[in-house]
View 1 (cartoon, rainbow, N blue to C red):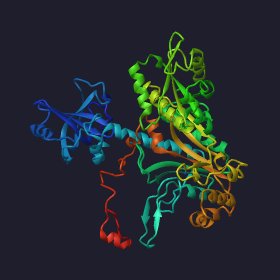
View 2 (view 1 turned 90 degrees about the horizontal axis):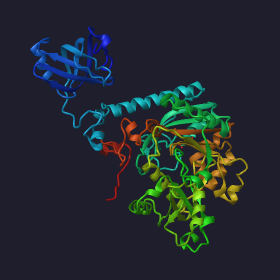
View 3 (view 1 turned 120 degrees about the vertical axis):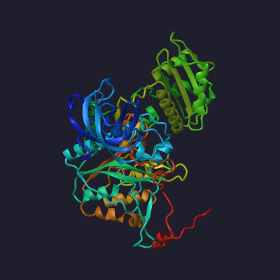
View 4 (view 1 turned 120 degrees about the horizontal axis):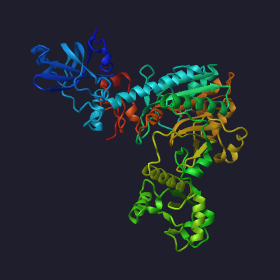
Length: 584
Ligand code: ASP
């Protein structure tokens, strides 16, 4: 038996008990006549004591020879500590050791295995197995497991069945590039790794499974923007005989369950906002509603006043920044420069100080008097002491820029409290999205999403106006889930493919299996998928999903620990009948 107890378990009530512990040497303190060793395992740290008076000198020598991260098994007696450590649960006791068995040595670790480590990100990723020994990483993985368990619990309590779907499949268009896998048995042919199990879960509905879920890996070969992973995990769900309302209800229930069980937070009905309103009020389809700073559209009160910049703008829009009237000139200049950074892209910014005494001071006093500015304040809901920031130009771009400013200011003002949870449904998404570059429409969610009832005809005349039964669940400014009611009729699905620019032959070749299935009694169905990595990191109150993934990839999609991706040898290429022709 390697251990009778864990290193996090012993208390004063265990004094005089004979115990066996196994773990890693966190550190050794040698006072000459007495040596203390901190022994660590997943559960905590227990202090071991080797004392000249009470142990043999051989044992004391052995204790001195233990290096950091050595793996040992010790046996001894639990005794009361003379100087107790109230900061750790085992701080009242120590183990007076009478036997040490060295289970394994360790090289000196490349960084300290402490809560605050001296190891940089790259080093920690290369030695991720050592990083996982550290409390912050270990606790995140345990936290993730707890979230997954609660998901499974809730869904199985609601009659969902977890069904695995294949990883070696044909392309599922979810808007990214596929990772492909060559098939040895089918020369020259490739599988694609699923961007999501979308078509399979729909086929499970045709198969009568009724309520499906799966905690599943998805693969998307995208350029890795900050905090994206080429492989990530979804809580993927689908239900038959449902309308949008049923889905929202079920998964609002799941989210509430998680918030309650994991965070002890109870939230009543989640607010809902249409996509159009979200864009108008927050300039963003995943608004963070933990704070206000809602957009106020100012066209009516700013145009036709000789200020050319505003007069020629499609949209003039502002937000009120709480307490911003006290910003110094230097701070304001910095803010203007911030919106002009290429990442944000505004040409400039007009601002108005709404002074505590009720007067206004703006950068456009030449064109607007106090009465005008009072109207701006009313529309942006500014109060004395606030700063009104106004951007103008092309409507879509300006909204995006102001949204970036809103988020930045909220961050600076500490309004994005990670311990506050503000979920929100965004509904009525457009079915299609215009690709500005190619002029083509593509599916905003995916091609299997159903238009709102009665809008099929509109596809012919005004495709951009068609709304879908598609919804996102947003939490604290992050999309944590998205889904839709699906098309379940063959003809509608082929019309949809036609509008997305597929010829009937292409549609049949790529998605014939799904359209054929629709001919055999496909029930009405719909679903949703949550991004588990992101959900866990938000619930954990942290920014980066990487911290909640045991073995994540870096920004170039590499696993630096196992050094993947890597070249394969000639023999493997030969077997696959592949020849590399890599351009220099
Ligand atoms: N397959 C979709 C996605 O990955 C989710 C869904 O529509 O259920 O975003």
